[in-house]
Amino acid sequence: MEQLPLGWRWPAQQRFETFFTGVNGAAVDLLQRVAGGADAAWIFLHGPEGSGRTHLLMAVCQAASAAGLSAQYLPLASLVSAQDDAIRSFGGSDLLVLDDVDAIAGIAAAEHALFDLYNRCRAEGSTLVFVAAAPPAQIGINLPDLVSRLSACTQAALRPLDDAQRRDVLRERAEARGIALDETVLDFLFTHYARDLGSLGALLDQVDRASLAAQRRVTVPFLRQLLREQKAGAGGEV
Image (tube, rainbow, N blue to C red):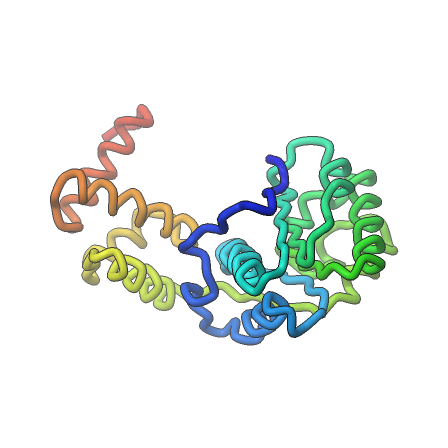
């Protein structure tokens, strides 16, 4: 995947206002200040899968663009090769976001390229946001100087939502689409599908399309039928 161009339209559903902050208020406030240009802090954002990292990255890029700043996003985990070339060609914007920094851990050429990018952006005055699953010293980077640079950034930790909070988020997102999800339906979804918000959001898109096509309310029988159709399409047992 190439880096996203300056004209990229950031996903409409991934905004600060649609992020369920919960216990992550400090991290969200910091990113909002950076997006508005009021804070020049370089940030290393870390949190486990399902903590809303990608949502916030899209939100900070969109908010920066809305504030008149240029923003670019580079998803390192999506690069199957030549990570160092992609990193070296990255830059030239007010805000640069590098997702999944841990994806290049142990790849010497990519680590040195990121180290060089760090120094170059310091000289150019760009703001960098780094993102990974854990703090810099815990993601397996071998280049000591790079670990030191990343550790010098403002550290912001994200904690995933618990099941009750995820249910609230899914219910609110469904209501925004005109879909009513009762507790029985939510119980079924959380029993039969992945519980991280990314997967639940994708599932909601699918359920929305299917219910509109079938002109049916979202009920447990409807979801059972949808699940059977998915299994049949995948060649699994129904």
